[in-house]
Length: 264
Ligand code: GLP
Image (cartoon, rainbow, N blue to C red; front, side, top):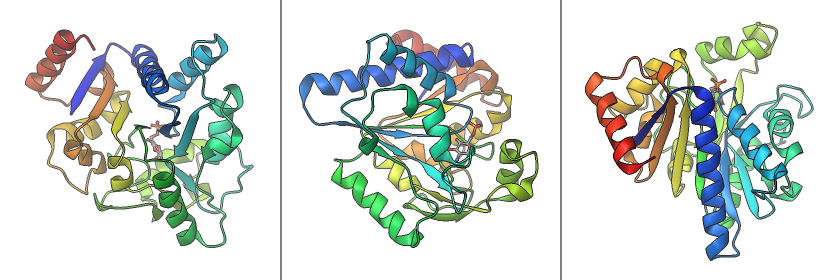
């Protein structure tokens, strides 16, 4: 695992956007096959999305041959609700780039058969050729996508009941009332993310210090599902200085040395 520590959220977000763009272009240069990109919601990726939009508008990047799969969606929240992840993704990315609508995949939290919807999602990822790069964030408790503590590191796309902690953290989008946050969500599994050829996780702010420490220095454990990234051959965390407060000084120094030597 690599941990790239940038001075602040903005610098890290722009770095991530340029990294994603370079991967899209690299694949386009060698094959006509689409680039398959996994995407998160949350406040964390917004600046990265803004930079991707800027690049598309400046003619530096195109999503015409990109297929996306989002990580998760609330169950039974209308698609048109401003806080559905469908609305979020269109507001912050898809409405502003040149991606064909049929290339966008977001779990349908209102599907009549949620288990069938989850199985079809896994199948669609395989049929697209697998995910080239999965971009993600992390919850304060270390969850990746909506893989709450005690989710198997071998988990697949499924319905999950959210923890009280997550309901409270996400209540900021629902009038600060945890009772208004849907109690369940659909999420790709930890194994779905780890099947990707590459995983890039953004971790910003002091509220994520414990999650970062547990994911990087803790044991691989279902208690902090981001720790599953330790088992991935191409896993990278991009964080800001505010998020590293709980890392050991020696870990911090090593990651900064790698960054300098490898010019990351
Ligand atoms: C939700 C999402 C996660 C996201 C997390 C962090 O739980 N399901 O994918 O990583 O929120 O959100 P934020 O980026 O707002 O801190």
